[in-house]
Image (cartoon, rainbow, N blue to C red; front, top):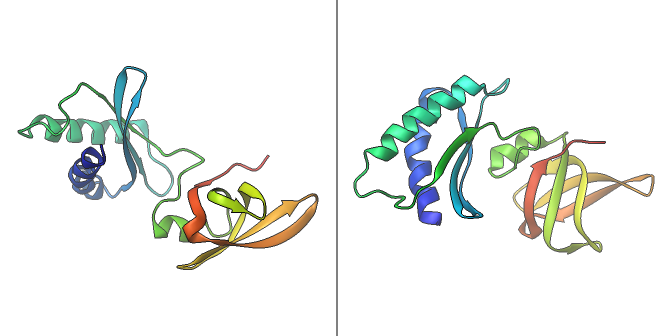
Length: 157
């Protein structure tokens, strides 16, 4: 289904750009018996419900006019904010997240752990710097980027 994500991303990008929003992510997933096409959009200060509806209407019209239909099965189109725990996908996402609390999960354990939460302190092509609280002591970790399976902003409790 990556093809659907690629096609929809290419269709959505000009719509989102025209409104000075950011296309954060596109996913096409099956949940139970239903398919969902989800777009996550944002802008400085946050996105509104009306702005999500605007993008949804414009994208829906574009999708309806493509022949042959790139998504032949029935699906639900959802356009929303990425939320407080926004995923970090693009390089700009990581750079914006420096100084913020993040959650990183790994393909292989790092120092015996499959995931860490902490403050992102640095970003370069090969590594991420992360300050974590380990048993009451602050420790600086260096995480190889190739080992990061998923990254997102996190809420510190």
